[in-house]
Every structure is written in structure tokens, then in C-alpha cells.
Length: 386
Ligand SMILES: *Cc1c(COP(=O)(O)O)cnc(C)c1O
Image 1 (tube, rainbow, N blue to C red):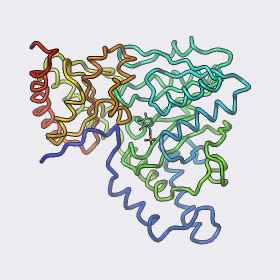
Image 2 (image 1 turned 180 degrees about the vertical axis):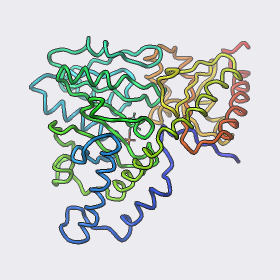
Image 3 (image 1 turned 135 degrees about the vertical axis):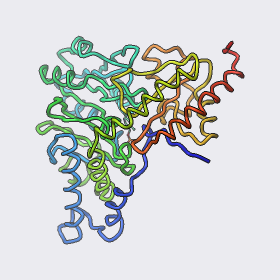
Image 4 (image 1 turned 90 degrees about the vertical axis):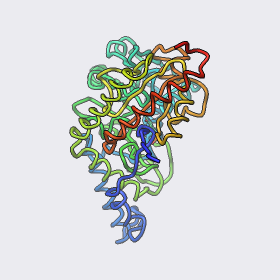
């Protein structure tokens, strides 16, 4: 059976060059980077190189990169770290209603511990404006945390503008850029970003490794205490193969980034254009232009996203109905609800996320299968009257 993987926002395929870079560190180069002997030095040098590769990809310095176990840990470290360290200055945090759960649940945890959190509402496209952020700032605001790009609908937030505002007001600015790194050009200095989270498995690197950029001069206490690894900012023996893989993957992702993004956008736009031409009563979720080059999200009215996914899967197509973390629960996506969709329309959403290996044949196959699936399910739907 033909298989088409359109769930790259959930995770991506590890590319052979990345595995190749990692292999020696899973076999013969096994020293602990903290050990001063030859074996340790070999591993230590590899970690240094990867740190530089990650820093270069976002315009940072190597000393500003902390390796973590992934995007969730990076988000937790940034938000809980700033909250703890700067509690005397204030206990107010600003975020949005459409963040990933790694940010939302961390903020909810802090609310139980005496912090106040403002969850900015978004417009119908999933956007917040810099004016909303400005109006929410209070004398006790210590942190603004707003995602770079949304994982469900692909909407890209006005990050440089928010960064400039936070810098002007002297408030720390963190962004969860897990969906953006490798797809969108990022320069943390130009964009006035103080902290940025990323995760290797979202850009064809290995799972279980990520990083947090922390601008020089900002002190973020560790989430994990123990040894002096990561300059006392994150204890635990380094995941050397993972770190090496992340370095190579981010380097590859940033090579010809614009060309790869342009190629994905062509296919993305073909889906965006052709789905409403072939299926009546659908709604594009997310912004028409300010969106990730690989994200398509449609609500197919009168039917359940879960049933669509099941039938797509039977036809070899892997898609998603929101985030991998929320599928399995029956609640509709908090992102789509925040954008003003009704429960019914939110339930009918299908997310398809491409990668640079996605082909036009893949897209044509989806355009052949999806209308048939929608029609079949609608015939069985009590809500649909043709
Ligand atoms: C995937 C994702 C995360 C979590 O990253 P992990 O490495 O899986 O912990 C956080 N934020 C966003 C926006 C994501 O897409």
C-alpha cells in the first residue's frame, strides 16, 4: 500500500546523514564528556561542536545553549527558572491561549504556587498582536512567553515586534520555537529573543534531545540538580549521540532552508487550494499567509476528525487532528476553540504537515482519497443534509 506521512509536526524521520554522525557515539566513542582522559575528550569535543552548530543556526553563541531532553524540558526550564529566580521582582507572566501544553501546563502549575498568568486571547487566525502584549504588561510582569509558530494551525506570531517591546520594557521574553526551527529563519539577536526552546525530533533529528537558548547574562536556575554539566544549568551525563545528532540535523535543516520551504509551500498551497475545490463546506484553520511552510489544517464540517484520520490511515495516509498530545482525548483542540471555532467545527479538523521529502504524488494521492473519505462519512452523518 502507498504510505504518505503527513504528520511532521508530531515528529519527523531521522535522516541517514544524522544517524551516520551519531553512530560512532553509540559505539566506539563512549567516554563521559566530563572525564578528562582521551575517551572523555573525544565525547567532549563532539558536544562542543554540536553546541556551536545549534548556536550558529539561531544566531547565538555556543555558551548560550543548554542541551535538554527536548522541547518540553526547555519550556519548563525557561518558565519555571525565570519564575523562581525573579519572584522578588514580580509574579506575573504573560502567555497566549494557544500555547503547547508544555507551556500552558507549566503556567497552570505556577498559578497554583502564587503566580498570576495572563492568557492572551487570539483572533480567528490564531494571532496575538504586539498591542495586546503591551496592554497586558504590569509593573510586576517578569516574563512574556509566546510561541514562534503554532503546532496545530501553523500560525506565525509577530515575534520580532514582541521581542522589541519586551526589550524596551525590560521584561524577559521566551519563545517556544519548536515548530519554527529549521523551517523559518531565526536570529535571536535581531529578534530580541531572550530564551528560545527547540527540539531535534521536529527537524529530522533524534527524539529525546532539545535545547534552550538563554541570552548571556540571564540566570536560569536548573530544573535538574546534580553534577556540573551544562555549566551547572542542567545536571546529568550528556546524551552525547543525541546532541551530536541534533547538531548535524540543525545544520542540515538550515542548509537551503529557503529552497526547501519554497518547495513545501508549493505543495502546501496546492492542498489549501484544492481541498475546498473538491470538498464543499470546509474551513481553513490558521492564517492564510502567516503560516508555517509545511502546515495545512482544515475543518471538514459535519464529520469527526477522528473518523477522518482512521479512514485516511486505512488508505495509508498519516495525518492528525490537532496535536499528538491531545488526540486520544475527546476534548476538541484548545487552539481551535480559542480561535472561535464551535465544538462541532473544531472536532472536524484535520492537520496535515509536510516535510521536504513530501512529493507532488503524495499530495495528489491525498487529494484523491480525502474527498471520498469526506463524502462517505458525511453520508453517515446525522448533521449533514447535503
Ligand atoms: C513538540 C512540541 C513541544 C514538545 O517537544 P518535545 O521534544 O516532544 O518535548 C513543545 N512545543 C511545541 C510547539 C511542539 O510542537
